[in-house]
Figure 1 (cartoon, rainbow, N blue to C red):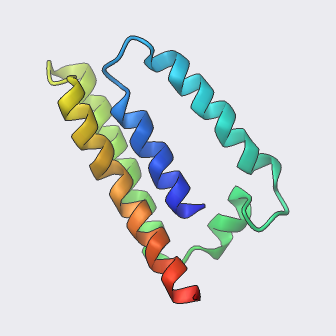
Figure 2 (tube, helix red, strand yellow):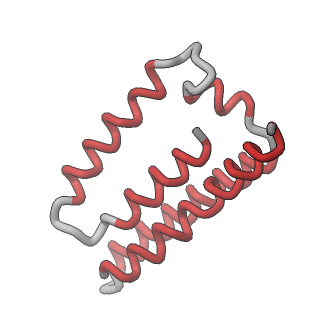
Length: 108
């Protein structure tokens, strides 16, 4: 789930320069409701957050800070291009994806 959240934030970041970004964001928000519905399930967002340790929370913080930085970059500059958004999406996804893969390997 941690890796999935990283990919989720990265894809949202990567589609920011496109005209269909609002529609994509609505679809992604609806998709995020599925893990919220599974409140008591192991894959539900509350369970995932409760299982996170310091490393995952730091990765989440890095992802959120970079997401806000991309938002500021997109609204205050002319750098809202597909290339910048794609690179930003990869950078935004990286901390959570890496922490999710690290945690998965430790549990094996």
